[in-house]
Image 1 (cartoon, rainbow, N blue to C red):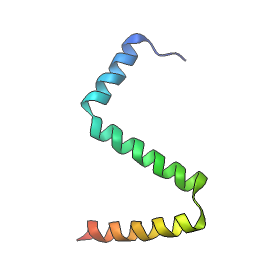
Image 2 (cartoon, one colour; image 1 turned 180 degrees about the vertical axis):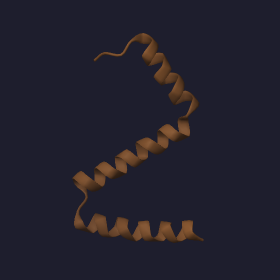
Image 3 (cartoon, helix red, strand yellow; image 1 turned 90 degrees about the vertical axis):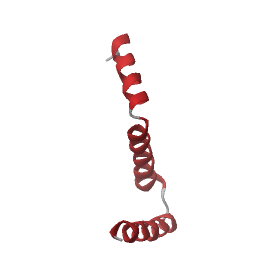
Image 4 (cartoon, rainbow, N blue to C red; image 1 turned 45 degrees about the vertical axis):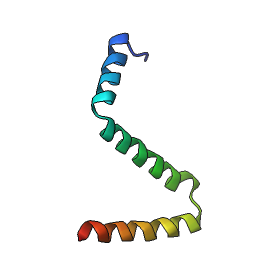
Length: 60
């Protein structure tokens, strides 16, 4: 289903007004896809360590 010109404009307006949220969603998607599709055992171990450290930071 093709988007209309007004839909494209609305999407671009949203993206320009919500840059931080759009960036957050994009980064989360990239991270999830890396974990699910490309990560090795070594990558997963490193990421788990990083996640534990980040959780401790957020808890403090």
